[in-house]
Amino acid sequence: MENTDTLPTLSVSRILARGLSIYGRNFLMFTIVGIVAYAPMIGFFALVLEGVIEYSTTMIVFSSVGIIVLESIVTLVLCRAAWDALSGREASFARSFRAARPRLLAGLGTGLLVGVAVVAGTLFFVVPGIMVLVLTWVALPVCLVEKKGPMASFNRSRELLRGYGWQIFGLVFILALGDQFPDKIMEAMVNEGQLSLGTYLLVTLGLSAFLAPIRASLIAVAYDDARELYKDRDIEALASVFGDDVDLKGEGGASGVRPDPYNADDSDSEYR
Image (cartoon, rainbow, N blue to C red; front, top):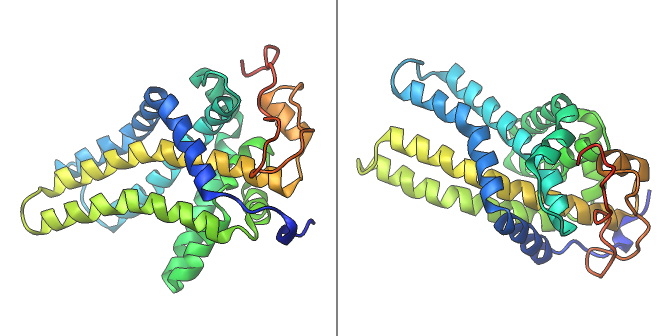
């Protein structure tokens, strides 16, 4: 395996710029995907607030697992759309869903494995949980593109991101600020009686539905850059997702100019 110390570093600013640009250019599609994906959980919380479903430890566990599942689905579907946008093509929901559909079960398994590992690490010590989250940040695109199972995707993500922990932590921290800052404000308003618990839960979940597509865009770009830096491109794996004519022979790193591996004409692709 190549020593990551010799590789150029991942650029947080570059990943943010590219990821947010992708989200901005495809705001409507990405937002609709996030809202539709989270709709079942919003309905679930509405039933809890109406007293139809009892608020309990079981409910909390179920909702936590549900959120992991929904985030995994959003990431799997939008990774393909993000890569289309990187290549300058129009993002297509139909093409993205067709790419993700065969990998949904493996992707959900990968998302749950990462979630359980993060929770387990956090329960014992906070730092191990954060480390697991950082090193497995691109496990879902690995599962999609390289067609690996949950454990193999888990380990492959660690390989790709080894040596780039602080950069990925920076991205995770920025996303956490966008999620936790308004959450803490609303939590304080609930404690002071200025906001109902129901409104707080629904707004928080709605915010997650908007942030999930942004997270998916950043994860897709981070995987694209990390894979290029690692210089371990599996032509067969990418071709099976993006078409047989994908050109992966361009040189250069994430900090330089390189031919985009996703700009091939996929008129013959099964995902068109």
